[in-house]
Image (tube, rainbow, N blue to C red; front, side, top):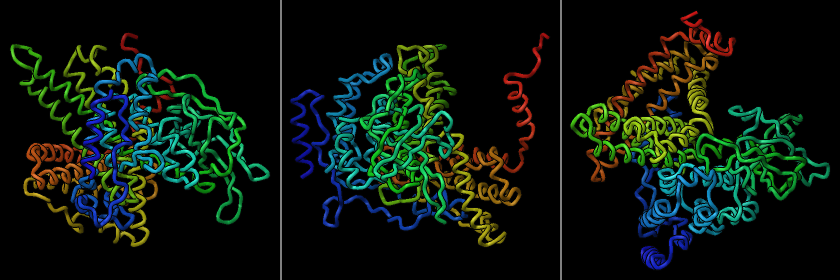
Length: 608
C-alpha cells in the first residue's frame, strides 16, 4: 500500500517543479500494531527510569540500553523516509543557496516558502494537526541533511520546532495543541524559545522576567526582556519563561518559574533589530521585550511553577537533533577534505599519500562516526520509550559540537589557503559551527551537569549503604561488558578498561572530597569527560556490532573505525581519571586570579 502511495506521489512530482512537492502527501505510519505486515526489528522495551550513563555511577552496566543498536523504523517508515530523504536532499542541493543566505543575513522568502510547501516546519507535529508526525529517528535523518548543507537554515528551522514550539508538543494540553500547532506546522507562524536574559545565561533559574496573575485570575501580566533569541524578530508565537508566585508544599508563597505560550498579537511584545553575528547569519537573532503583556491563563504550559522542568525537557528532547545535524556537517567536511587530498599534488605526489594527512582524515572520520552513532542510539532509545536520557542527551550535544569544531578546523588545515577563502564553504561552516559549543547549554556547563547528576546517584548509593555500598563500585566487584562480536574484542577490552578506571576515579574522588566535590569544577569536568568517552565508545561498539550482524557492506570498515576510536578514547579516559586523582589546580587558579585581577596579561614585557 505504502509503496504504491509513494511511487504515485514521486511520479506526479517529477512532472512538477520541486517547489510544488509537499511532504505531507507522504504516508508516515502513526501507530504500529501487531497485525502490521512490516514491523520494525524488536527493540527491548524500556521499563525503568535508569539510563546507561546514570548506571555507570551506580556501578552497574545497563546493556539493554546498548544492545542491540536500536532499529525502530518499520519497513513502511523506512521506505517512506528514503523517498523523503531524496526530496529534501534535492531541495538543499538545487534550491537553497547557503552562500546567498549568509551574505543576505536572512533566509529569502522564496526559500522559506518552498520549505513550508515541503512541510519542513512541522516535522514532528502529528499528522492530524497538519504535520508530518515523524519519529525522533526520522527527524534526526532529515535534520542531518539540513546540517550537511546549511547550518544557518538548520537553526532557523530548529529554533522554530526543536525548541520553539516543542513545549506545546511536550507539555501542552489538547486545546493548546489544536489552537497553535496547525499554523506552526504549516509555517504560517514562526515560533521562538524565550529563556535567556541579559543577567541569566547558563543560570536559567535566575531569570527576572515576571508574570503576575491578575486579580480576577483571568490572565497574567508579563514584563521583562529576553536576549539572543533565535527567530526573536520573526516569531509570532513564543514559549516564554517567567518568575511567578506559587505556593510551596507548606502553603507559603514563593517564586518559581512558569512557562507560557505568548503571541506577539497579545500586545506589548516587541523585538530589537537583528543582531550581527559571527556565523549562522541567515537565522534571525534578536532581543524580545514584554511590556505589560496580557497572557490568558489558558496559555500557561503545565502547572504554575513547572517552567524550569519544561525548559529542561525541551532542551533534553532536542539535543539528539543537534548531534544528527552536526554529523551531517562533518560528513560534508570530510568529503571536501578527501576530494582535496585526492587532487592536490605537492612534492611530486598526491597529498593523500602523506601520513599526516591520513591521520587527520582518519580522526575526522572517527569523530563523525561516533557522533552519528550517539545521535541515532539516542533517538532510537527515545523512540523505544526511554523516559530517562538527560545525561545521554547532554553528552550528545557536547561531543557533537566539540567534534564538529575539530573536524572543520582539520578540514581547513588540509585545504590550506584554499580552505580560508570564501570561494569554498569551509570558512562559512567554521563560523557557523562555533556557536554550537555555546548555545542550548554551554559545553562547559553540560560537562559539569553530566558529572554532577551522575554523582548524585553515587551519593545516594553512599547514603543508603555507606562505604561498603560505595566500594561495590570498584572494578573487581563489577562485571564487564561482553563483546557482542569477536571482531570487536579489542574495542570492548578498551571500553571495559575505561569503565574500570572510571569507577576507581569516581570512588576515589567521592571518598576524598565527599560533598565538597561539588565545589571542584575542574575535577567534575574530568569526571564528565570520562563519562562522555565511555558513552561514545559504547555507542560505536553497539553500532559496529549491528553492522557486522546485518552484514552491511561497510561492516569491516565500521569495525576498524570502532576499534581505533575505542583504543584512542580509552587512553583519553585514563588520562582524565589520572588527572582527577593526582592533579592540583592551586597554581592554575592563582594564575587565573592574577590575570583577572589585572584584567589582562600580567607578566612584564621582556624588553622592559
